[in-house]
Image (tube, rainbow, N blue to C red; front, side, top):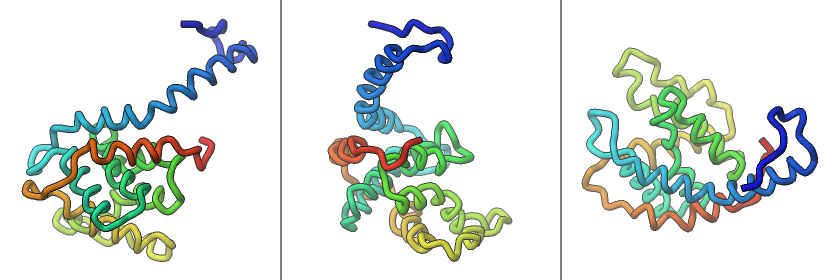
Length: 185
């Protein structure tokens, strides 16, 4: 494989950066496949839950699909907890950062904040403020995020729920991650 000539980026040439751009574009086109591969390995869970992380993601996405959400929202729902393993304290931000270049401002905001909004169901049991989401009460996507948590996230821990398979969502994931990015990061 051809490589760049530099060992420090400041010494790179136009040819070096054109070569890297070519490789990076090819790598970007494979993002959907890497995401699907990663999700397929989410076959464990934190102790105490009745289902795996993958099953939770599939249940949530199946609910979004059955509710006739946009393909973008279905994929975002499928990926909403993708950060649980690597970023348990800020999994929402992790998932949102993966989605951000490919989804609308609304979808990005919902996924970015769903973790905080989801604490509505548990915080009061642990001596915390279940209404901490209210700091965003005047935000235009406040109710949308409440609805996301209620309809797709908090209710998707049922071992008897008949969810769709990951392969059913693969075409949607590939569609969303083949879009021209909305944002330059």
